[in-house]
Image (tube, rainbow, N blue to C red; front, side, top):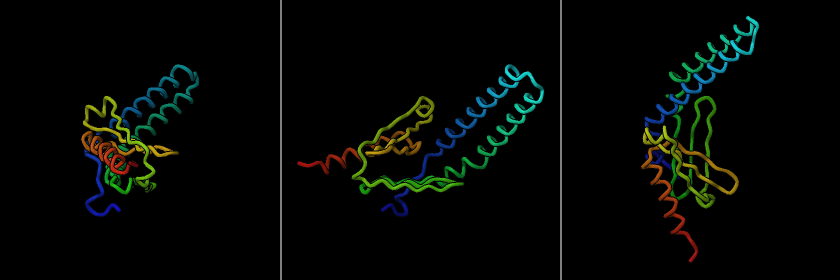
Length: 159
């Protein structure tokens, strides 16, 4: 199994990507509340409720940026080797995932424009009944993980 030095962490750029997602979500949430409060709700108390929602969203976003995301990054560990995938993550709710290698059907590497700009990729591990996302990991690491799975399947293919 994965021991000591075989557990891997995410690159530091993952923190930047998560922070960017948090800020973008907060801006969209605030804009929608502001629009709803000023254009669709004629009552003053509904406008005040919209401002309260914007304030709560801003406070929770700051807490996520400062406290939650760095802890999330420190808690995220994974190992993909000849025995399969093991993944541990979670700050408030811990999650542990184990997928044996013989159940992995495919390894898909995905990268959006923001991930590509940061040199990151998401690795999607597919089994018969589900998929599991790993990352974002470095683009080179993602390609190496996919290649390692391909080599493993070629080595174990029936002859």
